[in-house]
Image 1 (cartoon, rainbow, N blue to C red):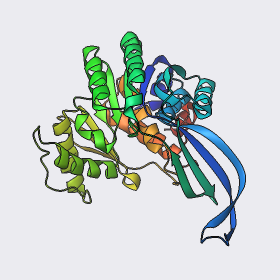
Image 2: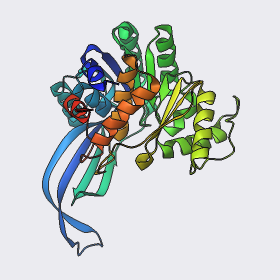
Image 3: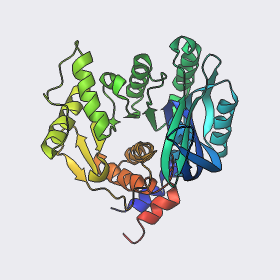
Length: 340
């Protein structure tokens, strides 16, 4: 298949990303000694920088691929919120659906890295759903008024409170009514609620945890038709993937398996295994964001679930070769298929 011709058509698409917006803060340095105050390394800082994270990194991937993208979510009414919004505008991401919440700070993840290894991560976040009601209503109004503009909706759930059961139901109902593709990068706690989506893209650990969560929390619907929650063998992965697709009534489940590649479970289709394209794994941060961005784009351009997954697999291989929360670009993806 000529994937390069598909990639060149990315710019024709308009995607809405809805999810938890995070500001990723990186401090890079070197370690040459242990602190005399405690058995911890002393990091001599060389540089620090900020990049959009969480759902903002999904939007960053899409923008880098030449797509028209709108990001919908919340930030705090603070310096970090203004910083992430400024960075998004630089990347030509539509920020009209990003609303400031005065009761919550912008989610901030600070990673200290030395000799290309993460030494520590410090998270700043505050969960207070009572302060988000007005933001939710503003988001719903914007999405309802602009749904006809979008070729697909991506739900990027980082479990920070924006993607509630109510929000999921609102988005899936609206997507079905308008025959819009809707894909989900899931969080375990919400797994039971991702019903009737076009596709869902958990990694292996997320799939295992989702199985446990479903068995514990779901007392109202038909139980998941498997009696194990560790996915070690190919047979276990096969049975779990098919069971989750049936349970969620999803069109497709794309399970990422790290060095083992990916598995595509499409409703009514034979399972398809895809080998990893990563040459060297430098940092897995952001790989899932690249996968759902490129996979969704492939679907909007009429690719089969398997072909869209193959394209996403190449994108993931590019991203894990970079340091930090990174995005794949259109030029990198085109180069990966040069001569093929």
